[in-house]
Length: 444
Image (cartoon, rainbow, N blue to C red):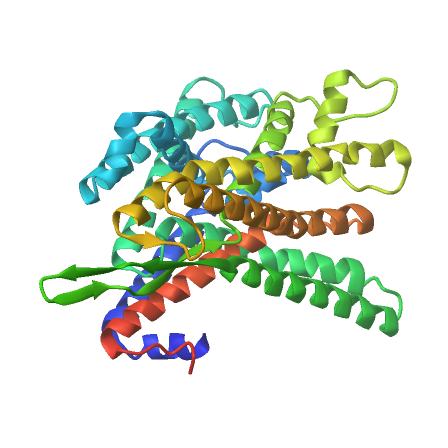
């Protein structure tokens, strides 16, 4: 990896692209610290500190949500709209045709994604501002501060969307993913300091401090190694193409394979599952309704506490531990969305038909329906393995936080995003080096 980066900086064109990405990320971090006019950020920070369930919003925005900066919405509207458009391509035939029309169709879908992003940014901005207004977070009365805040949030999200596309076009890697990466990474140093102060600094003696540091370091390294394996693991389905006689020459007969990634759906199932469980908590937080238990708590407050990830795996008492039921719901949702999203994005019937048209077949499997059934069975097995692996990655930090009271913002989802974006960016970097040098540097 270091060798790849070193060789990249030796090439002027690639070096300029990397510098463009670096300057773009500086702009992102500066914008994350510019507050919205007319907002009392101290009161907002105090409110969010008392509502830990809203902390996941701060992770994806790199701390800008806590500061209520102009980038408080960040790129979440764009990510949401991209997922919605991708799902709609299956339900709406016209969008499906656009997706198959090549470059022109993809440009049109990207245009729809941008428009939907702006709409979602306005809706989310209005909802957030109304929620904060009820908590008296504005320094001035009237509707003008509200309008200014909504415009600032929408403009900030639109600017980041534009900047992400510029990074994709003029830099290295997917711009939206790179912005999301820097937002998550920006929170890690403070989390590591918090872990050090809690478990190492407060260990009492040197032996316990060293043991605590070793355990924390081992868990982090093991999770990163496991995620790297999960991102790269794949099942290769062998494909053989029949030989064809054209004129006096024989063509075809080569062997190939269909790569099926173990983590077929990526991080999408985790995002869907987390969003579904956290949405009621976010709405309740803005409405001033806190999760609670006991005889005096209402049914709604108990349901909110079940959905509150910060309340899971608390072993201090059975009364609190029973709310870990939400974790079981979370696991079930991750597995369900893994199957659902893969079924939307991967069509075994279409692949089997394309193989048949090109004279390809899987050794030992007849073309047509047997091939479709075989691919479906293999895919279902891979999806389950990948979903279980995703659950392990996402649940371990939750258990660690619940049992030991570790207060960290990065989760398994964050780690998967970090590893996935870094690997994908390095692959793109190496591919550009291959074009210019006819060989890669990762293996040297």
